[in-house]
Image (cartoon, rainbow, N blue to C red; front, top):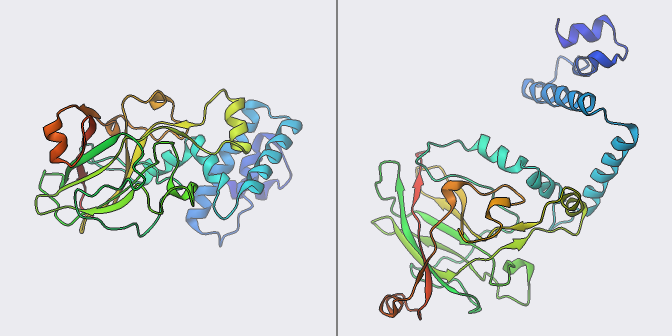
Length: 296
């Protein structure tokens, strides 16, 4: 018997068939995709309430929590996205939406601090504008699944400074577009740039989501990482991170953004001759990282 038949046969509330009754109230004009999504959501929500035996007091506490989440939202802070992040939902939606072959570079979440129209720089440019932090060279190639170079691909990169803040979080303290830039691959698909070694930082935890993390015995610290968006004509755009392997929070990212394939090898280089080649002083850090794109 369909949900519609159940609702028509007996339109009055019954705990045993509560979800079917709610879903049966949808009209014939309801778009099919909306019908599908709402049916699944209602089924699981009702099942969760029954399984956990949620009390009226607990349900009201949940409503107050969601109300607080809404009140925390501003033009520059989206507490509901933060809630989605710490529940692992943002990464799950990203994974479902961006399934790629195993050999391709994995996607991960964009994060709240991406800025469009960052400056375009020639390969080798240093995006650290304030001179703080341990020098880092990032170099590699953008290739297709067969290993062929993708020339003219854009490598859009951004990260925190040595104190764990993005430039947009410290207006007037950091230079605008500090540790941001867009680079273009050459005919061999190669790119390289100078930056600084990233460090961990806490997600905003002064609101209801932070209180939830505390109640769950979880910390707010994202492991050290560098963001990338890589775009190549005729290829799917990839939004991803690379992570520093020595970060103490690597295995406990509060937004579940770490994938094993995105943990990079940060090598400490003592060779002064090699440092001079890159226009740096030893020691410095070096990451070699290739991006593998999938045809659109």
